[in-house]
Amino acid sequence: MSVPVLQVSHLSFGPLHKPILDGINLKLEAGHFLGIVGPNGAGKSTLLNMMAGLTPPSSGHIDLFGRCLTRFSRHKLLSQIGFLHQLHDATPRLPMRVQDVVAMGLADYATPWRRNRHLQEIVDTLKLLDMDHLADADFRQLSGGQRQRVRLARALVRQPKLLLLDEPSAALDSVRQEKLFQLLRRLCDDAGMSVIMVEHDIAAISSHVDSVACLNRQIHYHAMKGEDIPEDAWRAMYGDHIHIVAHDAHCIGCAPGDLNQEHQTQMNTDKITGIQR
View (tube, rainbow, N blue to C red):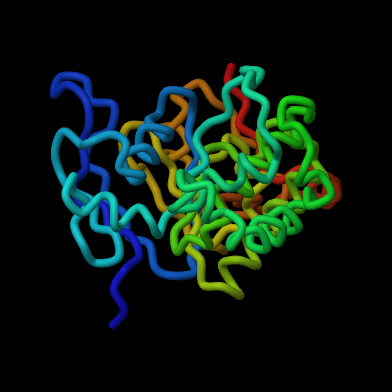
């Protein structure tokens, strides 16, 4: 039996009387594409930061590739991980070429004389995101969507076994979002990469991911492809004052039931929407 890429056991973070995360258990196999959804303040970014070794848990532990993530094992284990943190709306000030920003994702980026040996890897990674023609461009002069794609290339350039993404579609238009999700799906299927992606919109990711974890302090439900997310899980995430409208029987979490033909026609436009009242 293969060792899981990631195993989170009884993970908690924050004060005992009001924890940000409480009793998180999660296991991820090679090649699995996991989406994490939940409201603002649910602990999604905190959980990714803990998986990336940036924030130590209050209790519980994380195993990466069969080894416990500690301050002693952190450096070696994290060399096999790519991480894209949440986008902050700040204009970069330092003059850097696009390829130099991507090079920061390499383990030996701090030794400039070694970067030439990785130049082809950098260009190939930029090509995956249709950014290779801007390899020598000034990163500061790019649009927000272009900068986000460069940051994605930085997370991918070391060809990680595990990719952690915090809202990677931020600043991307709908066409670029779809291309990104298709790329991530190919990396899982063809390269055996495991991906954990935090997103707000389950509709955007449901046709690409293998499973969706519903998080709000705890994981209230973990739905596999083709499985419905029960209504009480939605309410546990977003509260009691929520109206759920399902539009597509094929997306994860949707359970249209006995919808009439008029509603079935509408299902082609959207997939699932949570409307708080």
